[in-house]
Image 1 (cartoon, rainbow, N blue to C red):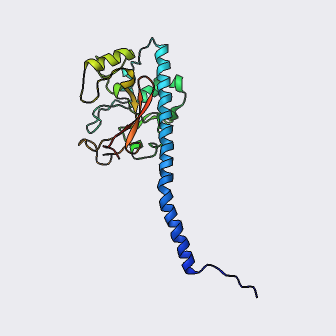
Image 2: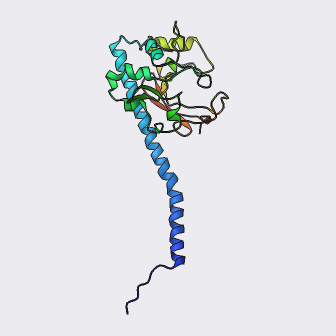
Image 3: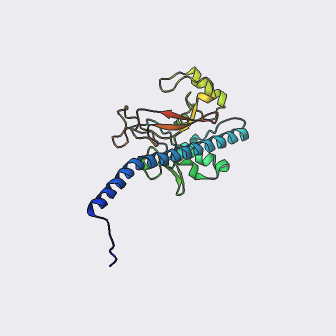
Length: 227
């Protein structure tokens, strides 16, 4: 008679153990690869925003937008926690829409649907399908006159000159446009006491953030203050 031999209990346990070990080894690798892809997609989003910004400059005599009215109209909210101003950039999504025509670029793949992505300091809704989740520190206040570290209505050269003439502990003195940040992933340093506990140490990308500079290039900044 033909006898069919199956796995013994010991053999099944060995197989399960091997699969579990392989999963434990490979899962972090796959997760890291996925996050690397999202970080690259985020950098591409910022690159497209930079290109749109420069097209705007070419159409408006090399002057950056002065839409403080739109900044206020969308709900300017300086926070009592952190950040102390409002770097959300819904206004930029509206102003640059003729050059981008794609609101998806205003959202990093790693932030949408996360705790950070829904934080009121990060998410700004212009319309139901028009949401931004990047920060623009140089357009974070609607003061009149324009503060030296804000860029409303300035040329890029004037913006750099104002930062050079007004040193601050919050930014390094720039040598040129390549040293001036234009847009960045949101982040909440764990070293700042005013940061809400639920957000303390959180960043869109683990351990750092993508930054768009005034000359259009993208740079990754390592930040040990974030997870």
